[in-house]
Image 1: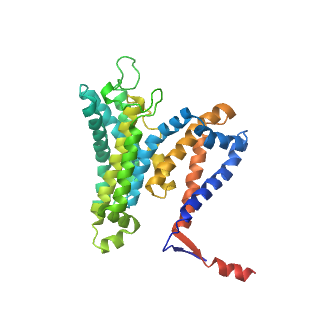
Image 2: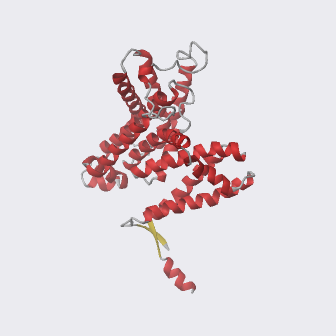
Image 3: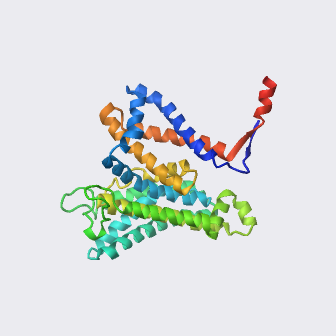
Length: 356
């Protein structure tokens, strides 16, 4: 009995494996929830269903999904290009810093200029933050997993240094920047709700990625490099250049996400600008099997669990971290199940015949 790569993946297999992953996750997390003193059925109701039962909670889920869409799409683009970008967290923070800096140094711009300028600045900052690891990978062959990961705490220390130094709020004295000018604040989509236009930006980026991957030569080259760099090089594709494009595009998307978080939700830079969004984006991309529409759905699913965990903590006295336990379990189960999407087991029927 052995594993062999699939030459063809049936269309029905991916949704079936997604349902199986969710079912196994519920089964595996039922035990910890029971040990925490709650009924698993009631907890799953709060985690997965309650957040979708009212307009307010649905809008909160979509709000929580916005940064996960950006970081999930960033990881997806990098992984598709064969570049394993683990630095989405740092690139997200770099984008937030850049947007805040532009708003601080150019406060008098009209909104039609300020909003795209700050978002573009976030994209540029994210790309620059990811440039050195990308060059080290394509020029020197240095593992990008290590270099991108090591830059994440550097970004966090940088933002803490700014907030405890020159950018400390002069009015309150708290380690946070002054509020962004109104022109730099993304508009709210619904009066009285916190959902902002960042979700439109994320969906437009997702659409651009989907079109690029499916209908352009660059997308074909990226997928080829991601599947097999050696085969891509043999066919004439410039692997290093394609990988570099994927790495910088990924970092830029994460940077736009950081800018969107500051401009749309917080309206100021704080030390908690990213609550692990870069790392959660890797979970989103993995759950989605690097499929763009599935990445949006995975971001909404994890946001639903996050919002539901807060409700479950209040109603069932469950630890708020139980939502992260459920998300982490879902990731581990998905990674194992994805194996069966890419490979099939050969020889298991022969073993069954011998035993019978």
